[in-house]
Length: 218
Image (cartoon, rainbow, N blue to C red; front, side, top):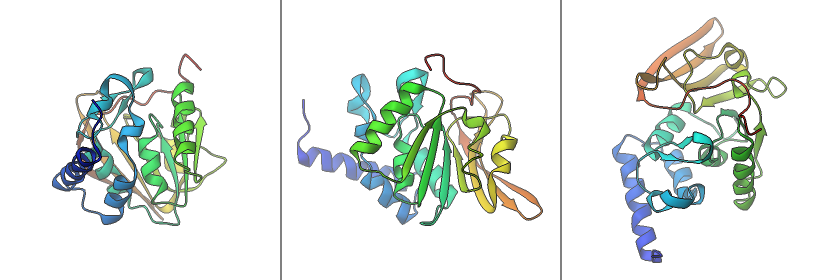
């Protein structure tokens, strides 16, 4: 059954209301999430649930995060229009697409060749010319493009990876989930200061683990 235009508009309105009710209040973030249709990033069995506030499985054993968490992470990143952003964990490309409407330049890295290829196709279809997707081990960042104004990890590390901390500008912000298991994780914000790093715990989350190396299919 195909949704009518009215049904789709209603679902998108409910989608934005759910974001606000979960604490996503930044108008620039809400505007970006309104522009990016999550339905374009979910195919197959779960495509009909694209506008629900829940994580959904995608290829390569990964997930697309629930929209409210995407919104809260993006809000915590405090992205400005002039920022250069590194995202570790491209996944479906949904988070990078939202960031593309907020920042000057996005570099997104994933260890799975299939996910990188599919995300590139989506970015091209959406004409997101300021997003560069790269196959690689994101735990080491992108030294050739560093430093970054903002860094976002969409996979959980035990601690903030030192190579990524080193690639963050003074005054820059990194947002990532940390935790030693998929049951106990916290979203944290790291701000680089002249004298070191400031760490702030934001909320409990659950993400797939950050894994070193390339995916086996690559």
